[in-house]
Amino acid sequence: MIFFIIAGWICFQLWQNNKYVEYPNRSTVQHSLSSWISWLDSHRSEILSDSNPMLWWMLKESATLTENSTLIGLYEDYKVRYLDSNPNNVWSHLFYKDSIAPLNPMRLQNFPGYNIFFLYGASCSSSLGREMAVTEQLSPSFCDNHLFSPACATHQLMGFRFLQRRQCGNQKDTSEAINSLQNRLVSQLSWDFRLVDVYLQRVLMLVDSGAHERVKPIWIKRVLSEQNSDGGWSGFEPLIPLSKDLSIGFTFTSKVIGIDRDQSTFHPTVQGVLLMSLLLSASK
Image (cartoon, rainbow, N blue to C red; front, side, top):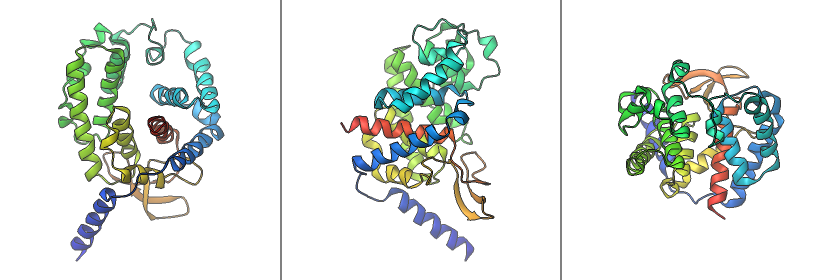
């Protein structure tokens, strides 16, 4: 009986995740974006203590797309604190095409492989291009060996998008790899209905990489529905409440289920800002 109940619940969730709905209208997307930006603004000091360069690159891209004064001001504060004060910051390559910050592979030994791939894509550094972390990820099938890393494909696609923006390497191979990863993300979104950080990231990367037409309207609608009342996103989907603050729910880690707070954080929220910014830009 328990097996059939669980199986029935999973089937229902899969249907909910793939059913046909009308595409959210522009005013709905705009309202969601405004709420997300308000969350960032009200947590300014908190997010400025987070130096994660990819999150700030996303915020900068959103500022460029929307010309929103709040986002522009936040990026300027980040720029002064983390970039202007440290000309040797390797992550300046994400923000400036003419960055001369040295990229010594020895200095990057403790970086996750996908970070090295980002830096290679952003800089087109020949020395980084010879690193195993880069050569492995140039294969579209790289994530076949990382099945328990939920964000493997989205991170790899981010790296290829930097290669594409910089026109670095063989662009035919890059385009083919991007198409392959888009197929992987569509499959993952169809079957993985958990409304966690990586769900939002998959939708974002499909839109960012030019596969907007492959994003089902229900996926956008579900992202919007998971936005918290404070305007942010938590990246954790609560299922069973344990107390006022804690719940058992879906996590974005390989553990799948965990105990956490449904509390908005910078990481998923800024991804939501970029997603909405891209959607609004595409609908002009």
